[in-house]
Image 1 (cartoon, helix red, strand yellow):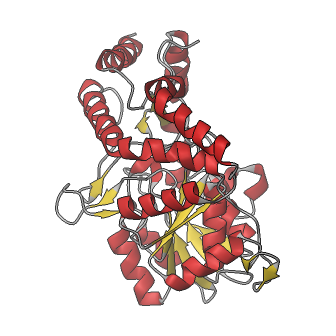
Image 2 (spheres, rainbow, N blue to C red):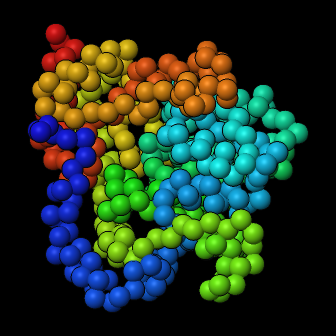
Length: 373
């Protein structure tokens, strides 16, 4: 086993064990396992935390994106502009909605969608933009929103990695929460996320009562009342009460956990200076470091060296969407050069709120030894 894993969910559980075990026992004793008061309470608490009028919990982050797109009216014949440098669920969700993904390249500093490329991707079929707040850093939403307003396009944020991130009004002072920067947003609560369930889970945020109502209908077989279905082509995507209860235990800790991640990032920034390209924090961004992802042409050798020396690391992501075997029809190789280059150079180092300063220093020292050699 690695001495310093990239994430430590066992330690998280042990820290909260008494509270989590009590929450699980409460649900098991209630006999209410799907929906119910735990889910309603979690939705209200997320709504308050994110300052979002509507929160709709669903079974996964992928479902959150897919259902939100359908609730926004995106469907067959439409095109949705997004980034190829993301987890594949972003592209899958567009296709599940019946639309066509149109890929534009990234900013090599932030790894987020580059707004300067939006114009070249625009067509008469473009219906929406789906920016990804990658690694916990918001996309450049001021420029994306301006373009969307100019061309009357919808915006769905992929906030799967960005719960608690902010788009800042002034310098780095906390501003508007990710999830409130477009028409709707999809969040993942996968176990490794900054706020993670003990299984798959996700949710949608929106300020639109129409989108919220449609999303709830779609996620519940097109039904408001049992055995009475008012929307065709409904779906089933529900959060179970056990996951909701666990998430309710964790949510009050999220801000302090994100603050700890930012502290760890500053330690890495200082310790890895001039060795690798450390993450760039945009002036508008309150970054919550879902991943601490560096760049180096020596990525593969460094990854192997870290493993040999007991340090966990991972590549997010080794292939952009258009180079995946299933999606090579989306764009030819070489047409999205920054995404392709990033996929060859990025490496995520250990990052979680239970990482100790001494462990961070050990990771830094291991990277230093690699480059010294």
